[in-house]
Image (tube, rainbow, N blue to C red; front, side):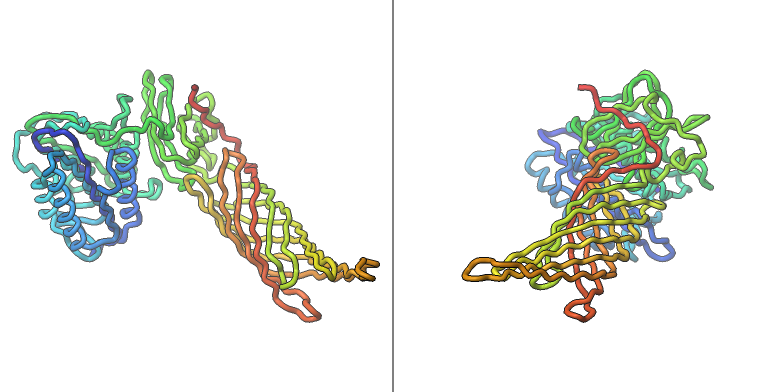
Length: 529
């Protein structure tokens, strides 16, 4: 179960300082199944508040895979830091996040139990004027129990840097007897991923560039219910406020220069944003006609889907270099409901052609280095796995007083490739078999009284089979073209001085690439200047 808890102090002072504690544990104890995403969620939440929540790095404490003793120590250190700040006359807003296993008794931390009462006492007694806690774990609902105060109707808690409220506001991501869920399609807990999306900008329904606690809660609740509707039990976030007054607090702000997706007033419907690098859903927007929306996103590459009764609209959004892009239904491609891309797809352009310049050190002692050119073709067979072929040639020369040694080689290679998409680039490793034709020509100079009178030519040629392995980085410059660089190492079996020997080859390469094939998906346009 996930919980967002806001405890507010009384009076605002001159400045508000934010302090954050973020804890993620994949390992609980006893019969707890190992989680997959809890520790990454702690990192993601910390990064989000640093980027959009006015939280500085030196006021951020991140703990992953830790135990109860380490968390207690972190609580003591954080509280000492908070009291030091308040002693100089500044207000403190405390942000606490936990993702992992828990029960009503406490947090399950790598075989240890941190009693829930310890966490609750700290949140209630901390010197911070405002305390916001997010606990994404089953059984954490004990934190939502009323501790006194006057119940009032639900009110909007808008956050800015002036703290003028007191009391308790509690938001839970599940009901008392419900289970918090992880989902592979989201890459994490359903509620936390919805909350992250909302805090990035999806929840900004009034388009003021600021995400309030109420906006984040409403968005996360709607998305959590929708995403678990087909499960055996629906996960329903809840809230309860016990407040003696109201004030203003901003959870996050949308950076004006952040990468963003702009949805104009005329658009209407549900738009799902999927990261190309991970294949995970990063945002879902319920767009009403008559309002313009801007969704802030990390730099990267995305697909946007809009499911209709008869088809699916699909567009590609390239935010690798930041900036904003407009999204128009008229610019999106219509895809049949049965098409793999309509269900999420995996690669828009499985074929990549590349042209590289190459450089290699000497194959043998006393031979020249090589410069060359090569062509590479890569074809993905399924997500992250493909085949690769390379054909290339290289030449080298070295001269001494005795003569000139020329070497030339041609190479044909093939193998398998594993590729992983990252937000701004693609990483790959590959390996396979190769065959090379190596030619050496030695021009021996015949000197007579200091002058070259003639040249005696010796030529040797061999065909050498071998194996190779390498890695590379691909940096997209858009949906089609990109820059590529990498290195390979190989071993040949060839005849050297009349004997069969192993020759080791190292080679670096860089060049341009073009992604081809697949469906030509429409691209969201740039923001008008």
